[in-house]
Amino acid sequence: MAKKTTFVLVHGAWHGAWCYKRVAAPLRARGHEVHAPTLTGLAERSHLLDGAVNVSTHIADIANLLRWEELTDVVLCGHSYGGMVITGVAGLVPDRIRSMVYVDAYLPEEGQNMLDMVPEVFQKSFQASASRNGGVLVPAIPAELLAVNPRDRAWVDAQCTSQPYATFVEGVAGRAAVDRIGKRMYIYAAGWGETPFTPIYERLKEDRSWTTHAAPCGHDIMIDMPELLIELLLEAAA
Image (cartoon, rainbow, N blue to C red; front, side, top):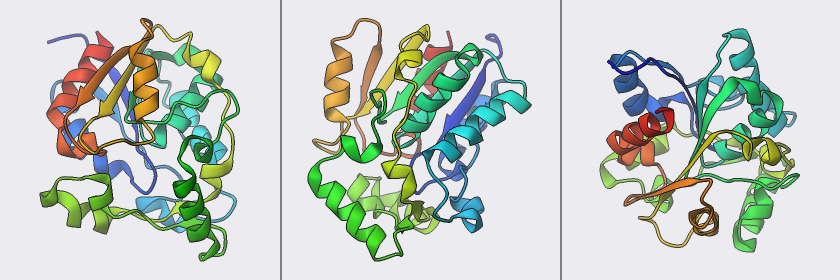
């Protein structure tokens, strides 16, 4: 068997650890150590959702996991909003990270927040949604709009929970640390048209310090094409 690797899989907005089931279980079956924590305020931790939960909270969730589980030489993977989180983690504990994998994810420049990287129509939609909910939370986007495969859409909709709005508007530091990580991979979901992730992918394709891949599916690659994601995570670990 190949050398045992430690993977930490960070979910995106509205999701939870549940979305990585099809990836985590096969990796564990191959003898790897896999952590797929749910961020504060989401899924089974949704009872902790309040206006104080921001991206710093989520960065601390993951940085503290690495610290207290004594994880080193980690392949750190973030999906979508999870890219904000893993960027911040790299800024705090770069010495614990072997590889960074961004899965159709945001890659903020120093100090950028998530709303800085989405079109104005999305900014206004999220702001309006939050204002209707006390300024605290943003209800989940329907899975159909994320181009989740039809078979799994009802399940994804049932599993998703509201996202703390403050996570979208707080800037993140850490990009310089990401650029110093030895292996960096970006996996783009090419099956749902022009998205906020398209310009990130197009830019990184031209950067020889990054490895890039395009997956022919919707946004939730870990649900639509888990076998491909497993293969690419193992590539990032090699």
